[in-house]
Amino acid sequence: MNIIDKLLFSLHETNLFEQNEQFINSAFHGQGRAYMKKWEAGVIPYDFLKISVKEAINKIMNLSEGGIFYETFPNSIKTPNYGDKWGRLANYIEINNRYFAEMEGEKCKNGIFNMIKLLPCIPPSAFSWANCIIISQIFPNIYGDGFVKGKFEENSIYGIKLNAGYSNNIISKDINLAPEEQLKCFNELARFRGIKTGFRMVISADQIKIADKNTGDIPFNWCNEAHQELFINECTKLVNLGFEAMFIDSAKHIGGYDCINYAGVGDLPEYPQMQYILYEIRRRSKNNALSFVGEKSTDDFMKYKNMGLNAGTDFITGDDFYAVRDLSEKLKYNRDYAPGVTVENDNDESGITYEQRLNRVSSALFGFFRASDKLPSFMQTNDIFPLCHDTNTHKIMMTNPSYSTDNTPLSHYKNGFAAEGGEYNKKLGELFAHALQY
Image 1 (cartoon, rainbow, N blue to C red):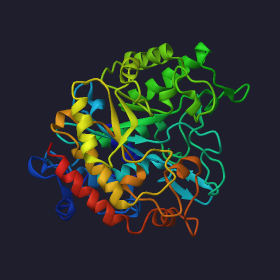
Image 2 (cartoon, helix red, strand yellow; image 1 turned 90 degrees about the vertical axis):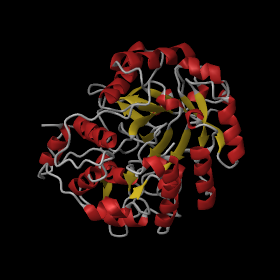
Image 3 (cartoon, one colour; image 1 turned 120 degrees about the vertical axis):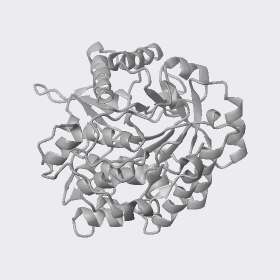
């Protein structure tokens, strides 16, 4: 019995799937040689969040890239293979899984199951580079984990708790399946879709607590070797569950660099210390193909390459296609590390038009002379599924409001996203359809 069988049985479902020709025919297809790469576009999240986990997995099975319909989930799924340095070229799509969670009354849960429901709507990887979902939250947040709060009430997922398992916002306690197994299910299904996965990690000491049953929460300290060891082991556990990338918040400032612009709270690791941490995560997980992405780590390329990073954010937007293409050409011999194209970052509070978003995505996907020289790119939830006009990317990182009008999850799914987002998502799908053949 594989992990997907265990999930379905724990949900009191069968592990048998049914072929759905109507769904297959309605799917978007990649252009040219990517015709067998399929996904659903022109959607709003409500269309998929309202269905059951079993229905979502059944849709995933009908999008098999190989054209083979599997009546049961395969026992062995391998990650898309782009070599050990795949992170240098990837498109990173950060999705705030807490915002997609099941919000009912004051409780928030099941974010990872709802991420499974969204997998049919994420374009698979291209021939030359991977698409990688980064989930925003995985560990408990300090300010009221598992609860819905007001629009202006602190509930930041930039503050995390280690040694406390995984966030109540994203796991289910209603079924007989361990949190680790739930996370592994998401990763297995993403692999079946031809998508890689990763997680966001904060490194500012005062934004991390360590849970202790005897003394209560302990402040994190990078000078404490036991704390460093816990950090490494927590990240390694996630890699062993199938995550292949780690997005490192505030990575630019590691070692005290440019701290005048540092917006985090508390000490950061020293430069050699971060080298050791990343090396150890790779070594302990026995996975040399991990991708480490540094937020804003783009000023001194060699420094971040030698730290162990593969990509850095916020060096260039996609507003100017030719600037992106020229940078791609300039850095084409840098095969280990490159700065990337940012469509939107997690601190974005100002709105950009749908046309500007699509233009940036287009530059990120096509800004090269050769696909093998493509720059990495970075997108947010808003770039895939436009949020409602009452919020923005940074706000849903800092707060956890429900947009439900009747305290039900379905109402939040319907009201938390832009009503016109389906048309935008269709145009986005058209861009990916052409890009996947490279």
